[in-house]
Image (cartoon, rainbow over all chains, first blue to last red; front, side, top):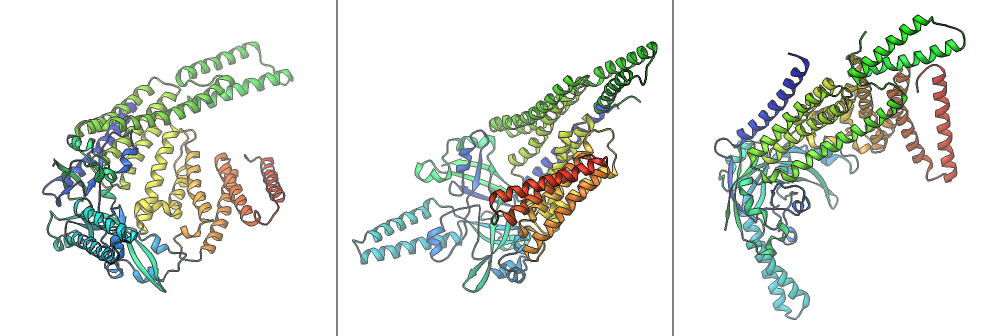
Length: 284
Length: 353
């Protein structure tokens, strides 16, 4: 074999083997029964404004809109917003310690040099619940908020601020009932089997890989440790070519509510490697 | 001995030209006078060597050709980068209009076809410029290939992908004598080793770049390569290893010298910054010294650049706020003169600078 043929053979071998490994991984992920399979809608999956900016990218991807359960006043102010990450209240110091973080060490470090905190990011598994207790809680919060604002308005029927607040609360409840995402991050762990045993309903609880980073905050004199969750896997879910039609003309997430565009349903499957893919789409 | 690479052939051509000029000078000065037959034989031999090399290696036969050649090198470098970017954006523009099977077939097909094209062009391109263009496109196609598979099938990103990219780049670099591809392969290795070092220390691999110290092991590794493996057949390869190795040591030191919080060390950031400033001066001075001892211009120059950078940033820290500007710049100028004096002394001892 001369040098040129050998180079070609080696180069081709690298290309073929690398592709085989990558595609084999995809096949393995999608083989057998999916780890979870959830029926989502435009409330939980949407094109993002980022997509509009990439006009030279003909690919089409959707983002998973998931939320952080919040309590108290924060619930009214932030609860409807979805994001790629956040700090859930259930991710407290006890839970962080269970996840293997050295809470005392992280808290003991001075406010300046915090190498342990900076290198705290690690891969964990996050449980996303669809239209469950967390969403009910958010709905209940919005209803309570409306009742409060209506009571305030009844006490001062002519107060401009009370009128505006009551209208906002009504709009808010409507959004919560009809538009906001019903997908909430409710737990995290490192053991897939353990989490699945705890949340056995595979059509309601989706488990994805996420990244968790510690952060410190101060509550008066007390240092409080929290965790910031971020699911990279949900950032961009490619829409298969055969299913593009439904989404090609769909407005981006931020404009969906106002556009009056037809709702759609998406069956999202998550495989053995916890990598998601779109199985089917239903235009409603 | 017949040269096997273009750079060896070019070196021989340069030697012939230098010999001819010096011979003419010696004859003018009456030191040496060749006989007519000897001169004719010598000229005929050199001309046949030059003709042979021109056909086999597309060498630069004179100064004008060398200047044009430099322009061609720059053009082929920029062209290679632009062509690779063009391939990338071309696929991005249209990939969404094809089925997944067609997308995957196109990606793999493009990688294989561009590899074949590189081999075909290399057989017909003695200069190597067009081979470089084709090889860069082949590398871009392969990078795009694996990257897009990840996007199409929502694969979780992994640093492992850097290994096949590096292997492919090294194959093209060593087979076709391409420094640009060697640099690409080295960049992949730097990213992979620093990610692994970070993961070993408990840092998530995508965050590994936030810790400058993760680049020290790969820096040492890259500096060791030319010491352990001879690259005589590959002109400029050892220099690339050394420069990247020094960059992996000195850039993090420069950063940590001003950002102690970026360190793994759990001590006062002020101490960390001071320590890395000293380390930066020591390593860059060592690079100058070792480069000078071994006649390695690349090492000397990289060392000088970082020594001066470290010095000027320190001057800025110390004096910018407290000195009148004219005095600050005068100090800079005096320090530059001092560097010149030191380098001239080194050159006087027969050391390259």
